[in-house]
Image (cartoon, rainbow, N blue to C red; front, side, top):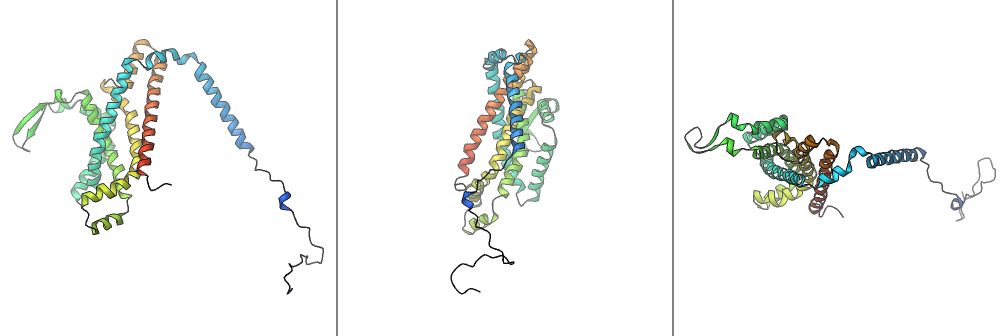
Length: 298
């Protein structure tokens, strides 16, 4: 064993001379080859190019007819009806969904059972069936009477005049949306650490303020992505009210191509409007999520 500070001499056990030192700086670095990746990229690019070429040059799309109807007054009015259905269905649905969510989180077994039963029923029945039931409400109930439960009524409304096609559509969409909104809100609330509520209670903060200032701002980070998906799904799902002859976007497109026979370009009119408005909702979702994500990202 050497007692000096000189580095040890590299020798083999057989006494052969040591190997020369390798100059790693002189080595040529070669990137890893991915031939199959490039082959997949080339094949995908060729397919996309072919699709785009056919999409533009195929006369069957009838882009002239598409341009004539895309901004037609009847289409713009139909888009406005679709937006109204989406707004009212979302606002009423999430308002009721919040109530149902906190009923399921309640300590009362009765409230939990009622909320669970509502969610189970409205998630089990198809939306189109619900809409048709509300549309035919006058067949089941001629009048709606308000007064003492199981007693005399003070005033009543004619169901036929009260619940029209538009009202039935909004009611059906909102009640259907509430069942899904309740589970989204409940999941977001449960994602908040319960220790924060315990700390807030120890500080004497009122229960309502705990929910409004502590729970909901944090729960929104979990609620927003799923809620935005539900809103977009509802926006596209408004096309189902065409069975009730409501003049929303898809119904008007059907009426027009039923008259002139231009099915494909009219379907493209509806498709492009749905894509544009869905993209706008996605952009809005991004900014709302960024607002509630303050303090969590850098």
